[in-house]
Structures are given as structure tokens and as C-alpha cells.
Image (tube, rainbow, N blue to C red; front, side, top):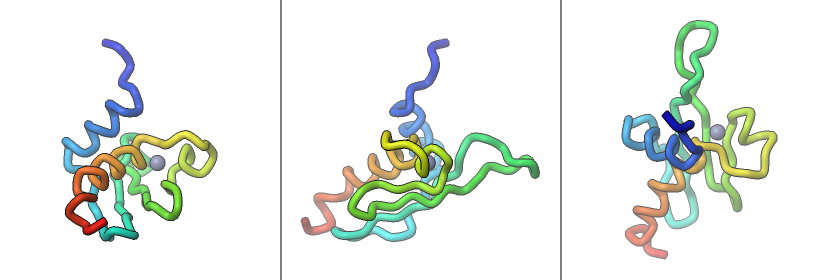
Length: 88
Ligand SMILES: [Zn+2]
């Protein structure tokens, strides 16, 4: 099977209900996203992703890379879908 792309993973995170929006308005978007990689307790990490001028995420990729991680892309998918209803 071909390796899942970041964009495909983002869609999967949305489809699996692993994106929980915590703030959503025309100016604000924040969410908690459940990651894939199990931690030492066998639990999935919770990453905080938000739109703050640009997309930011608390995962290692989000902190270290300019390209968007799958968590930020997943939140972006939801945000783009609802933005017309947010009034701007
Ligand atoms: Zn991330």
C-alpha cells in the first residue's frame, strides 16, 4: 500500500473524529487533535492546533517545520468548510 500522504492523513483524522474544535469564529480557530503515535502510556497524544496569523501546532513537526503537519491540515479542512458560515 502506498504511504499515506500528509493530506490523506489529515482527511483520516477528520473522518475518525479525532479533531475537536475548541474555538471557532471568523477570526479564531483552535482545536485539539489526537495524534497517531502512542506515548509511553500507550495513549495517543493530544496536539493543540490553532490559527494565529498562521497555522501552529504543538507537535514536533509543527514547531520545527514550515510545512503544515497533518494535524494543522485536518483542522484547516474543517475551518475552510465552515468559514463561509462564520460571516467573513
Ligand atoms: Zn501537528
